[in-house]
Length: 84
Image (cartoon, rainbow, N blue to C red; front, side, top):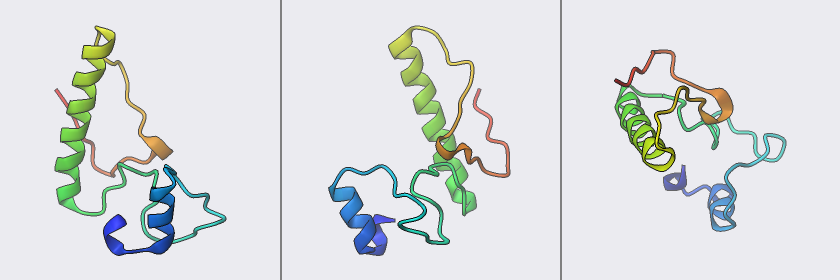
C-alpha cells in the first residue's frame, strides 16, 4: 500500500503505526493489518514462504515447534495453505 502514494498511509508509516482505525480511514482495499488477505494467486506463494519462515524462527527462539497460527485480523485466504 505504500507504493500507492496514499498520503495517509505514508504518514502512518512515518509515525510507526501498524494500523489505522476503520473509523478514521475507511477504504475498500485490504486492511493494513490483514497481512494474509490474498487478492491474487501469487499472494499464496508469498504467504506460504512467510509462514514457513515464521515457524522456523519460532522454533529457533523457543526451542519447540508452534502448535498453531493465528493471522493478524484473523483473515486467511479462502484456500488452505499447508506447511509441512
